[in-house]
Amino acid sequence: MSVRAFKAFGVLTISLDLLMFGSGLGQTLLRLHSDTSELFRTVLVFFVLLIIGSGLLYLRKWAALYFSLPLFCIGVLMAWSSIETIPFPLNLVWMCEGVSLMLPALVTVRMWSELVWQGKWFF
Image (cartoon, rainbow, N blue to C red):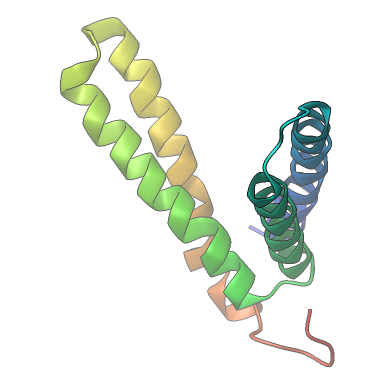
């Protein structure tokens, strides 16, 4: 494995963040009675994901942790909860999706020594 995986995660995070922000902001602004807290939440999530994606591009350990640990937890919950709640053929699909969300944690563990906490700049 190389550090290109983290850079790919960073590019994917930033591009999906921009796509999500564009659609979420458009839906928020189209509502006439939109709440300002919803707009604030949308902008806050956009900037947090943008910072994490930038940290992944610059191979930062904190960004790898913020990226891989929540995905690992979500993957474990998806795989574990699909065993009893979803009928047999479809629960295998949900379990595979849950396991695929655990893979960034594996990449983080394998590449931990090549990541850095901080550099010359914040990112």
